[in-house]
Length: 386
Image (cartoon, rainbow, N blue to C red):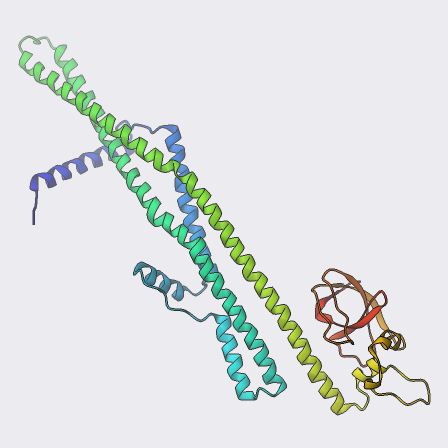
């Protein structure tokens, strides 16, 4: 091992001298060279960028992955430069549990079939969440980490070097000042002619201090320019982070749109299941089910009630007007709805319709009226107005 004692001693001496200068500046016993105001503003702006980037990065990680243990695992894999194993999302795990429960209860039962339907959609939601995590990590989290671990480390290194160059410059200024004072004091002494050799040494010392000051000033100016160029690059960093924010917002919009679409589909499926279960239950208990009354309408006194199969869809509007109406009111449509049969009314989001119910009707459904069109509409797709 090549151990250079002189170099070590010299480095220790420089470190000690800088430490003394820094301490005297803090105590107000030494002068300090102030940086250019423009450079000071750049340093302040860079510190602000670094601090807020760290906060935004940490909070985004918490938003995307609330589990701290999982975040620590991701951090370790990232530092080891290894690919993180695929992790099942909570929604996917919930969906899998629902499917397994459906197998236990029986997929042919109403509860089992509903568990299968909800479980499948939970797995779809989990898949959409996985895509959000992957996209956000690639387009938003990674660029922010790259800035903190790359550009900012370079800026911090050059700033430390600039501070050392400033300390060296102030040390040289202090040395020159002391040399000038000693030379002036010697020149004013009564025995100036007798101390000429000593005065020559003082003059040489002052000249050496001036040379060191010029060198220190040159190195300081050069390092200040390098630091300034790096700090001005923060503007480019802001533009890059702006694009990353746009990508992150787009990924979130895609994710929430997918979730909204899946939940609308799930509501439709659940409404179908509820209608099927209600129809089976009504048929088993009631000799005159609501669906038959809805299709055929009440008959005149003494007449027999015709079956639902004998009615045509074109007579639906006339038959509904014969039913007793309860609580007619306006309603706003929240989502688009496609009628699944001739008994139902298709809906468009944000349109206003008139709704009412009839005795014995399923509470999850209402009769909707739009102009000359009438039909059953799901309550979950409506906002009832006063």
